Length: 139
Image (cartoon, rainbow, N blue to C red; front, side):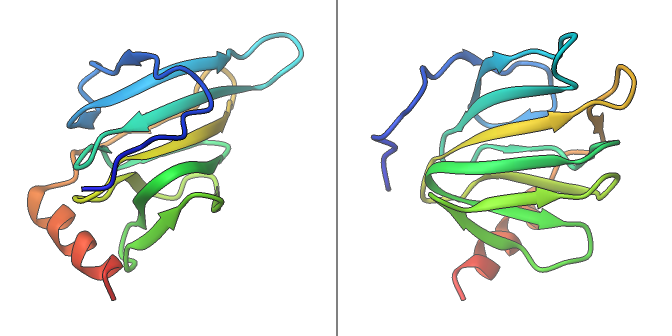
């Protein structure tokens, strides 16, 4: 199993909001304020950890800083994501992201706000969906 060894920021606090499967951690780097209409967070996923399906009313950008993971849009084949990748997620696109089954993954998330909302959480990614995604990224 690949280990994460190149953390840029501290790991942060474990995410316990019920919208993640497995062990994921958030270090909130920048909150929305009068100058910035986005939140900026460093998210660490241990192997097997992932978000629920969700959307963003004004989109999101992910900058992968270590490890390998998965990004998948609803109805599409899962994509392997790795250190150095940038994923530009359009507004209102249903998707999920997280670590692969064999590696942790760290990304910086830049999440835009629409009024006071930046994410709409949906159902969990099932074990079957996750297993299929892991097979798809091995091709």
